Each structure stands twice: as C-alpha cells, then as structure tokens.
Amino acid sequence: MSSAYYYLTEDEKDSVGWLGGNAPVWFDGKRDLVDEPGCHYGFYCTFQLKETGRSLSIFLPESFDRLLDDNIYPNCSIKAFAHPTQEESANDHFRLMPEKPKAGERLTGYQKRFDYSRPVLKKVFIAPCAEKPEDDAAFLTIGDDIFYVQNENYYREALIKDGYEIWGYINEDGYYPLARETELIHGNMPLSFGAMYLYKKGGEIIAGYWQYS
Image (cartoon, rainbow, N blue to C red; front, side, top):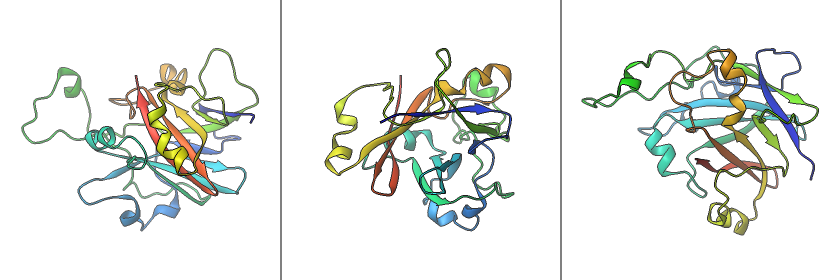
C-alpha cells in the first residue's frame, strides 16, 4: 500500500484540516459525546478523509495521567470521530489547554513559566505533500510507511485479533521545522514527543495506541 504524507503549514491554501484551534462546528452542542465525568477533552486536530468525503477529528484528555494510564486498545483514551467536513467553530469549549496544577501541587521551575490561560497549540494547517522529503518528518502519514517509537507486538495484538489494520500515524516530530520558526507549542508537547497510531476496520478509524520515547 502506498503512503500519503501531510505536513504542517501556516498557509491555509490546499490544506485538508488543521491542528490546534477550535473543533469543527459539528461538535457544537456535543460535550456529552466527547467529555467524560471528571475528564475534559481538548481538540487536537481534524483532517479530511479523501475516500469518504468526511473528516476525522481527534481529541485528547486534558489529564496527562488519564492519557498515560489508558494508552492502548481497547482502553485508549484518545478519541477519534468521523463526521461531515465543516468549518472551525467559534466555540472554544474544546480548545486544548495546559492541565492546571492540582491544589497544593509543588510546581517545577519549568511549570511556573506556563501561562495556563494560553492553549497548548497554536492553530496551523495540515497540507499534503506530493512526496516524502528526506529531512523532515511528516506530521500525518496515511498508509503503511510507519515508524514505531516502540516496535513491540503487544501494542497491536488485540487490535489485529479484533480485525483492525494499521491505517496511519501522527508523529510529533512533524511539528518541526515549523515549531522552530513560530511559537507552535506552549508548555509540554501533548504526547511527550511521541506518536499516535490510527487503525481501521471497515469504515471505522480509531486511535489504537500512542507511544513516546
């Protein structure tokens, strides 16, 4: 299977979606679909699915403990939703924000520099690239050209058993070189400089697991 590669850009022209910012309008009024009791979710990215004419939007739990504890199928806490392609909402309920410190938590010097009123990600666009450049990692790869941070079978055994196949992956290395040219990330990288792996069965696409080095 050949692969398609997508990169981050500040230019909206020819883009198929965006990283950061607000969720698509389709999620207005759908807080109960995305959020969970005691766990708020933040919008990560959305991009068009060429084969269906729809889009896939991905949300991360604001709690890093939840993200870390539930990192693998069938309990992967990252949520992916296929939905009609729509524009960005003006509603910022799902804007991905830094996790606020717990009461009485002792902060590191690094944490003290965070502005907890600022989103984790500046909004940028996701655009296709005709071929894979040698020097820069793609942000999104759809196809079988997959780099595994940890190439261990136990991550995918349950997925394969249930009929899922690898569909693509999102690589935080793909924030660069844009992250060196603009203040793309405020605070910690959402996946600790890692990657999430997307699996497909029939018309369903899910986040199977995520890894970090």
